[in-house]
Amino acid sequence: MARLRVGSRGSQLALWQASHISALLREQGHQVEIEVIHTSGDKITDVALAKVGIKGMFTKEIEEALAAGRVDLAVHSLKDLPTELPRGFEIAAITKRESALDVFCSCKYASLDELPHGARVGTSSLRRQAQIKALRPDLDIHPLRGNVDTRLRKVEAGEYDAIILAAAGLNRLGKTQLVKQVIPAGVMCPAAGQGALAIEIRAGDDRIRQHLIFLDNADARATTTCERALLNKLGGGCQVPIGAHAGVRNGHLHLDAIVARPDGSEVLRESREGDDPVQLGEAVGVTLLQRGGEAILDEVYGKGIAVPQQP
Image (cartoon, rainbow, N blue to C red; front, side, top):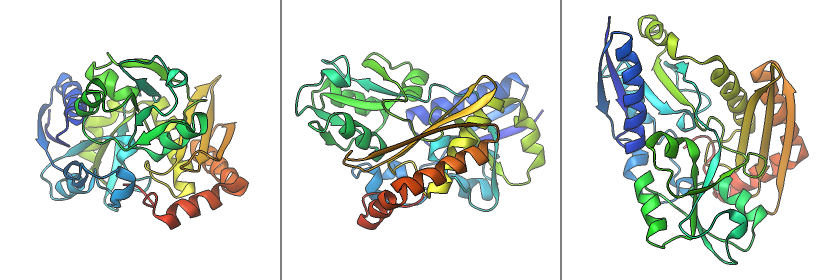
């Protein structure tokens, strides 16, 4: 059996994810150690993600450690990874997916619909902001940064009436006490790859890849490949107002996707079924561009509201 070094960000959630994968590897008989690597995204905590403008802000330093041979594999939230990895890296496994949905967290209110006029809602995502504004243009949306505990404390302290987070992170950490509503994908389309973990390795490292094959989940691979193909066709990252949610229905892939103006004044939706993940994602992406998505995204990029490509 092998001695494997796992690279991970240092946040509570990232370490949970790295520890989870490490435990599965140890069950296979491997010796595993985790190396914490601090990324640019972890160091910049007082600026909304969409305004930071650093490509690979949650992955660059980890990939440098991979390339240098300091670690053998890296565990990422898939939605943090660019749709096109830098040369020299590959995704060896995408594990069984947690919920891809977003959740509404609050101390006082049961749902988005129940928030009073002018309520203060926290989110770091233009995708979430756009969809909230489309539903409730009266709400006061504010940027929200920090780890999961920090964000939840801000709600408990009354800084926000509610915040929107990914269900997966809260489920993994067992911190669901403030979850009042799981928001359906038809109301808030999730980010591409949300809820999935990706195991990144050096490209062509067959020895390490063989150790990780058992972690790769076919449904998770198909659905996230579809979502990321759409994202790639639209030229966007997780901080651009694009949503994608794929699932397997009756043996076929079904993809729901949106492109939205950050102020929620326009939300384009498209749904389609298919069998090839990449073809389906790209086809839906082309349709959204043709229906007005290109103009929306050009405006978003041109105004510097969000950074092009992945953060």
